[in-house]
Length: 55
Length: 197
Image (cartoon, rainbow over all chains, first blue to last red; front, top):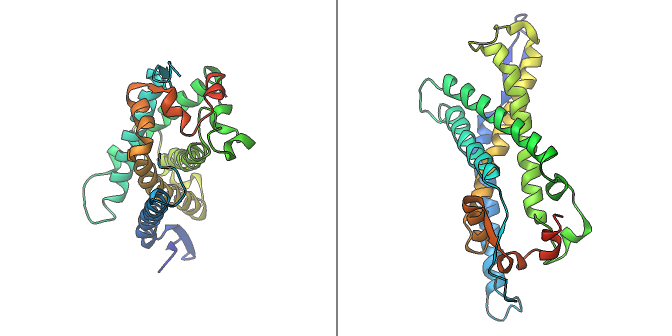
């Protein structure tokens, strides 16, 4: 997976052109991961006998 | 307590308008920039820069209003009480951190985006691709892209917490303006909220 997009300047030297779009799914799935982790934590907290009061 | 269900104003009408116009422009900006990358080809640039300017204007108005008509400390300052249960002021620790993350993403996107208008060209600004070196434009694009990726992450997390049943009172407050003391008691110290902390 690439982290950056590269191009060339007028002298043919490589320059950074931005972030690689390979990282777009990473940002998406990182958001989904936070949601899933929170849903699991929330379900465990609400389980009867867990000692936690449901909201 | 008898007045637990009495509605308290949490968000004034103008702040609710700011929030939903920001949300709409962010949706347009993310769609017009990311859909072409995902293969949906259309003339995205015109819609993108207009939405970007609307967002810039809304954010400037929000900053002015927050500084001169509101108490910015309620959102921007972390206090020891934020880390204890049921003792948050107007905003919880999670809400303050979410606002901080959005602040970084949106300000980076706006600053780099406005500069990049100079490279791409808009009707009211003379095009000047030589204003920065290719390396400088590359760094600008890199920061703009990172802000977009952070925004994708934040949209998912923000919408998820907005629609959770136990957080629904905050969503109602962002739509209608009001919240009850009973709703606040789950995570807030109502006295702190009423003191404007």
